[in-house]
View 1 (tube, rainbow, N blue to C red):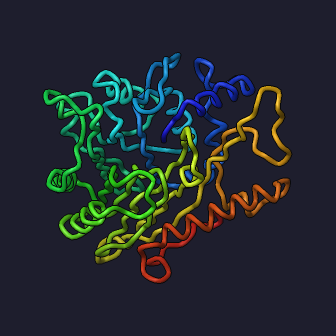
View 2 (view 1 turned 30 degrees about the vertical axis):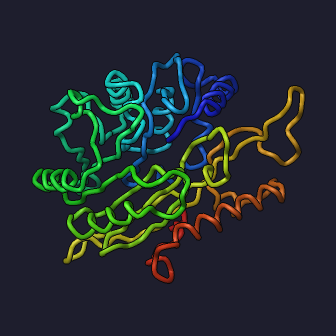
Length: 351
C-alpha cells in the first residue's frame, strides 16, 4: 500500500461523488475492484508501507511519506485482516507517527506486525486464530538510510536479521503458533529479478527455519514466486496500490498471492495461486481537455482477469493493456520456478 499524492486527490474526488469517507476522503472506490478476491480469504495480509498522518492532513509523498489514515478504513472494508508495517519508510516521521499509525490500525480493527509503540509491544508476537489454527505473522525490513531508528528507540522497528527471525519464530512456536508467516522488505527497487542478497536470505530462511511462507515486498514490481526447500517464497508481489510520479507500467502491475494450507499427517501441504492486479491511471490532461474515448477517467485498482472475463464496454486499447499485465505478470512470477512454475496457478474465483 503506497499512497502517493495523486491517490489522495482521487480519494477527495471520490468523496465528493459518494458523500462517504472522513474529512473529505473516500478510498473505497479505489479498492473496490479487488474486494471479491480479498474478502474470499480466511486471512488477508497486506503491507502498509508508510506511516499515517491525521485525518485532515497535512500529507506528504516521496521521500518521507505521511498518508491519510482513511486508507486503513478502506483496506479493512475490502477484507484485509492484518498488515506488515516494517519497511524503509516506517520511521519517516519518527516514533510519534509509528504510534499514530498503529493506533489508527487498532481503531479500524487491522492487525499489525513489524513496528511497535513500546518495548513491551515489540516483544509480542502477532498471532491470530484462523479456522481453529493459530497463525503467527512476523515482519522485518532493512532500515532507511534517510530516517534510521534512533538507538534509544531501536525496539520500535524490526530490522532484517536471520538470527532475529529465528528467535521470533521460536517465540511464536512456544506460544502455540501452528503456522508462521514472514513478511520481509528486501531487494532492489524496480528489478523484476530477485537480488543476490534476496536469494541468499531466502535460502537461509528455508533451510534454517520452520517458517511456512515468505511474502516479500519493496521492489514495487512483480518478482517470482518459487518453492524453495519445500517452502513457498514470494520474492515480491509488486504494488497493490501506488501512483508513482513517473509510472513505468510495471509499477502499476501487481499480484495477489493466494496460499492454501491443508493439514496432513506430515505437516502442512501448501499450494500457491495468484491473481493479477493493475492500477488504472487516467491520462494527464491540459486544462479544458477531455478524457479520450475509451480511456479510464479515475485511478482504480482492478482485478485483471475479471476485466478480461467480462470485457463488455472496454476499448481495444484497454483490453490490450490488461492482456499485457496478465502475460507479463505470469512471466515474472514463473521466472525462477521449475517448468510449470513449481505448481503455481492462477486463482479462479469460482473455485
